[in-house]
Picture: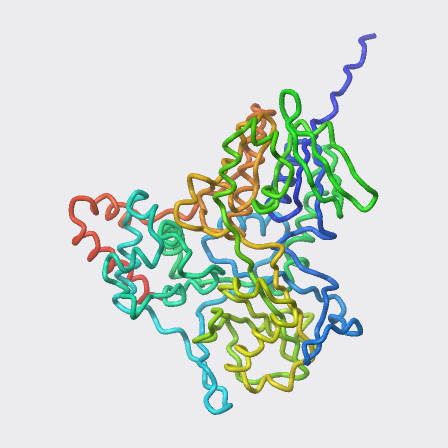
Length: 513
């Protein structure tokens, strides 16, 4: 009788970081039949794309009150997030985790402006005015630029160099209908905004943005974790995740992989067997680790010190009653020093609708000024700007949920950072990167960038370890229309004709909305 063939145990991958990028990488790896051990410093998954079940709550006097609690079954997001139509990989992920766009997604269409109150009276909100001819012309010219023409310019520098935005009248991101970008205008790279418009314009005639009808935990992160477990069982792989495990040191193994030092509630953990590692850790975390030996082996990793991050601060405001005549969609507090925008989630989340009272989420486009404040100071500043526009909210606050997010900032798409961003596969064998700061076609800091980077890390690992396995499915960015591609080619020889034809094309699209 022939001897039984001994089954080889599946290869194991260590994923460090349980944010969206790490989770997506884990999902694709277990689908390939690889076992995954995921280590997360926090007590939940999702990172900046997640929610807190039991955050600290503050009463209307900005005092921390442990007697307060969120409504049963409700979580508080790290900050509200919108999902533009050009999030191709995110929308494919939605389908995979069973999210139903008909019932689980609110299709946003427009943005609203809310001016400051006048003598204590809230002013009417109005749909955001369409871009002016100057703004449209600036968008068109930006779209047509090649990388060398925009690599070393901020958005404002590009606009001023073309006389679209003199110093006395700058064009802000809000003017460009890019309200959801949570970085200051002065920092953002012209190249990145060009790439955003190249992805956004082809779907501009569709709904402008979508929002989930529930917390990120309920609608995205928890279903994604369930899908990882299901995929692991189906592939005969093993998946385990460990909370409260904070990485403190990374040292290269003899030939490939890493020796990982982790601090947990039970003391120090040393992983000597991490032959294949996905570093789904933010750059600011990687820079804090003991990585001197790893950086010596792969000097390119020192490029991480060129990358910068800013906090993405937010606050939820739970009211004692229903406020009337608020915009049903995303709105901007015009003139807010911190660029505050808002969304009334109590109209969209079923678990909040039944409460019969207003719940608003606010985020600040520029949160750098909050770094030196504690939660109380942060709430005082945010509420002052909020009450300046919503004076009828004063006296009707039940409690606040602050998210300064100082310890979990977002990567900033500064000028010139692209060459310093790591590739999905490190030069050190067995080490891979995932996170929206990793080079990827989405470019801009976003959930789509996080998802794409997780897919890219899994694909790079597949190529190295399982070259005969089917490739990881990665959706391309939304393609530019052929007419715009032709104008990009025309630009070097006849920029005036390219500019005018692009403007005519964009205006025709806007008239169809």
